[in-house]
Amino acid sequence: MIDDAPESTAMADPANPDMPIEEFRRYGKTLIDWIADYLDNPRRYPVLASGQPGDLRRRLPPSAPIEGEPMERILQDFNQAIIPMVTHWNHPRFFAYFSISSSAPAILAELLTAALDVNAMLWKSCPAATELEQTTAAWMLDWLGLPSAWFGMIVDSASNSALQAVVAARQRAEPESRAAGLSGRLVAYVSEHTHSSVEKAAITAGIGRSNIRHIAVDAGFRMSAGALREAIRLDLSRNLKPFFAAATVGTTSSTAIDPVPGIAAICRENGLWLHVDGAYGGALGMLPECRHFLDGVDEADSFVVNPPKLMTVPLDCCLFYTRSPEVVRAAFALEAEYLKTDVRGAVDYMDYGVALGRRFRALKLWFVMRYFGREGLAAIFRRGLKMAAWLGEQVSGSDRFELAAPVNMGLVCFRSRQGDDATRELMNRINDGGAFFVSHTALNGRFTIRVAIGNIRTQWQDVEELWAAISKP
Ligand code: PLP
Image (spheres, rainbow, N blue to C red):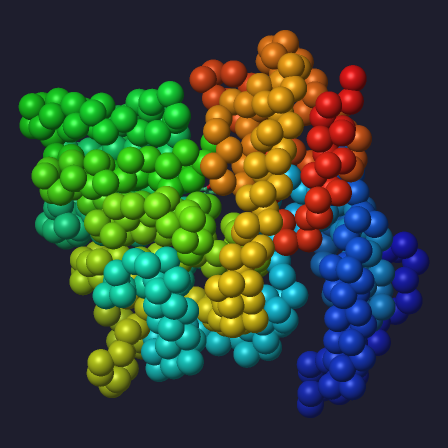
């Protein structure tokens, strides 16, 4: 397919090297139709990519074309070479990791984002991008009932948000470190179930892996506040400097909710920066019946909620909040002559994180918030929560399986009563069948299947048939 295609016809007009506008219009319509068909019937594809590592590399030429190629040929290869190697996160039977999906209004917004291709590094470099970022961040705080005075911004990922939090905490604890480097005495606290990205952030920030404590969890996989207090006491007695703790609302393995009020009190007493990771579970706080998930979060120094995880916003778009933007700014801002502006009284977001070039991510969030509204998103969330609760009931009512954690959000963790090998075999049988994709974790050292429900296109029938596949004798 790739070797037999005709010669290129691209770049016919050297004065206008871009694709001719009529061609753009034609292919734009073709691609919108492709996307519409895809969203209308993603089930036509197997959820998991087929093939082996290296298959696509072998199929594609080893070097890029010297001459441009016609769109037909690019699209043909997209369909025939790329798509078979795609794992379809937008598939209604994608139940792995945190099953995320993009809604149609968000996809349309992405199109506009690419067309505008602005850089939200400075207010001046695109005032609309900065101010829409401020607006959507503030709207979300309002929906979640969190302090309206918090500073909000959009970062690519929860991982980089964690990095911002750790670096800000480092700045507050050792302001001199910015000039002189670290003392080596700072200690960070995560739980055994904190997402690995927080530890990675601490490693990246130079805290040193030996200065990261993994606090024990209770039977519900929640960080033990007592163990945290004891660990801090011990580190202080060794002349170390506890400076940062992360609590999670909706852990990755089991959607446990750490006891944030108790952890916040300990952090306050000991002067630690408290980062609350609500990447997955935070958004559920907009449901009145789930608002208690966010108890104590208003005491955090920083907080994240990641709209791609539940809110149907395509990757990437993570809301990062802090009560202390001046500390974040002190950690990251660095003046370069070519970036100075004469604008006063505006936020230049490049001063609050690592990245200079920043996509106009707020646009897709704004489209989603406006198109669905809070009630529309609440309805989407509730449907997923109900499906997860139903699946959890099937599991707990069966004598072959057991729940490995309570179903409090859109995640069902379970295992075979026959042990790890049987659970692993079951997962492989489900995934090898090609109809579903589920993933796994370890809970209490035991292999556990995770079924994450949250895809906007998942129907009841998908969940019922998943249960039929699980419970098949
Ligand atoms: N925090 C939690 C609770 C997560 O579940 C994840 C990813 O699933 C992350 C952080 C990291 O998110 P990101 O992929 O945006 O870096």
